[in-house]
Image 1 (cartoon, rainbow, N blue to C red):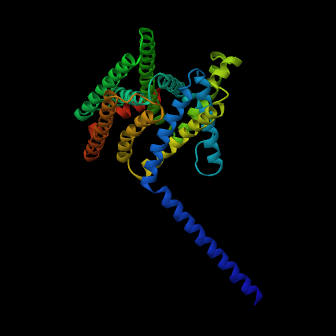
Image 2: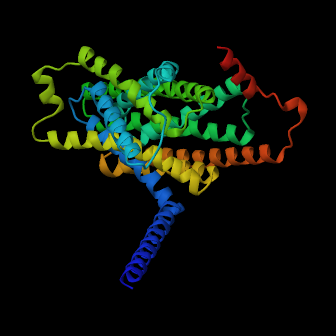
Image 3: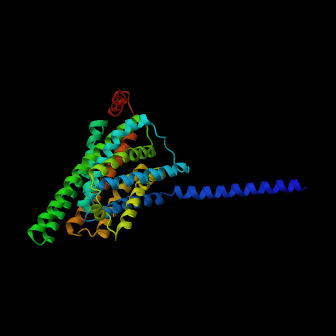
Length: 374
């Protein structure tokens, strides 16, 4: 009798455990399947990364850009490796052959992020966000050349709005620099800062487009997942960034004090760590948003998200609030929505079109075949 009671008690405990696990699983699935949480997470991580980078780079004497990028990469690798060991995510183990194939992409990533940090140092967040739209145009025409893509009339219209918003933003920036500065010396200094920012922004647009297009082509060959891409991108850039920081940047005690002043040292270090974690959040929330919503919703969220990012610059970093700057933000916001709608319609048209034998070997597949031959 005693044994039977023990068995009954044991079976009841097992059933209770199963019910608790099922309840926890249901709650977990409910959270990870919530579209609103995914969208808010993606928007929040984008704003967090932009604002923390701007906070670090807005220091008057900050010039250790390679070191900042190295810290971000280290934090990202440690974070995703911890998640992998905890069973939260999975990606491939390090492979030397795959690393050799991916190394050129990592070099392009360094160029993209490095030019981005300098552009963000000299330009306000709203202007930086508006000019970032120009990268979309370069990528779109790069896809036409490399993958046989097409540009619809609606997409072309959105490109026109993007260019217009950039012109308005530049005009507003120049007007503010000229009229807010008193003497000619300050005006000349303000214009030099803006010109440097526009030059870095132009290089960033080119580097970003080259990186995105090259990565897309390489992913077709390696069949990397999002986390594979993130792991190799960050891991391979660490030694390069560390070497560049050690040999190209000034590590004298005087310069270190300038970059990390005693009164703000802890805040700067924390911001650097948070900006590194935010890269992980962006990657995860992007995949999360696509999974629980749709690619259409994700593209719309990306377009709409430029508005709060631009506004964060006005709120937290005292970016000039003028008629021109607000107008540029609004036009850039509209251009993003128009482009998202254009891409959505283009995807729907492709789905509705039936494939024919003549069109089975598209420019995209030919590009992939050429990549295999290379």
